[in-house]
Length: 287
Image 1 (cartoon, rainbow, N blue to C red):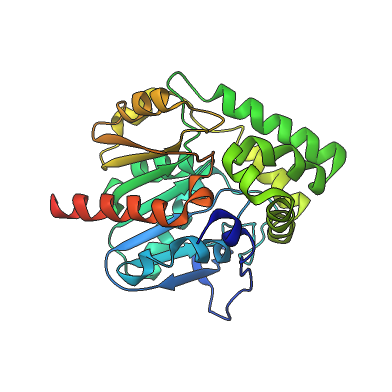
Image 2 (cartoon, rainbow, N blue to C red):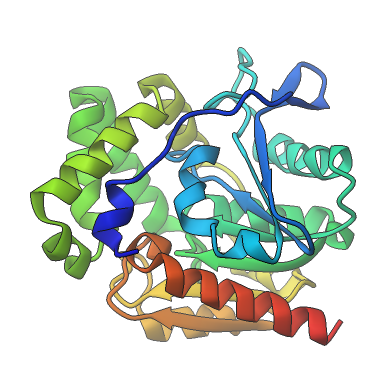
């Protein structure tokens, strides 16, 4: 499936499945597909669990693919106060406990790569490996990413959701995908974008992104094998910097996806899944 076709085929309908209680007052919507080694998907603050279906179908043939909605987003519980990064990490572990998953691979994208890092540091025994797609982690800190998110937040607050999408699209989507998809692709993804979140949810998420630890030194403490998956047209990191970032992890490597942007699985769903599959199989074979 091409990038343009994937944009036209987003199934965002929720299944009628029981929510999972992870902590006091919190029940998470989740989906599980396939059997075998567990791969758990971590949403950034713009996507919901159903969005992953088009981008993980190949993986679900041979692995147990788990997705869920973050607390205060999608079909999961709403709390008066936005969860902290620590609470989001506790939710991941609560979800694993409820599904009887002893340890899992975490696949994270954009802002959720910070959550993946935190889970791996706080709960190392629960993480087999990390796949960080379009990481927001930097070689010297996370200032550039936070500046970008502040600009998005200002657009949202002053001009609304549609303007935010128009602001983000040329920054997040690769040049090739933008040209290939054209106006139909732009409008198709916009429909999904507007359906997955409310202004309040995005305001809370973009505000949380400004918080948390930023030191690159934290990456040297991550015990799990780590794969950085970076589009060569990523807004935050060049291919050279991606390899340098991966080298900060004790067991890190970097895979560059050609003609891909900040969310590389959007550009090449099959290629992204093949990269994840190879990483999981190779890591399992050396365990």
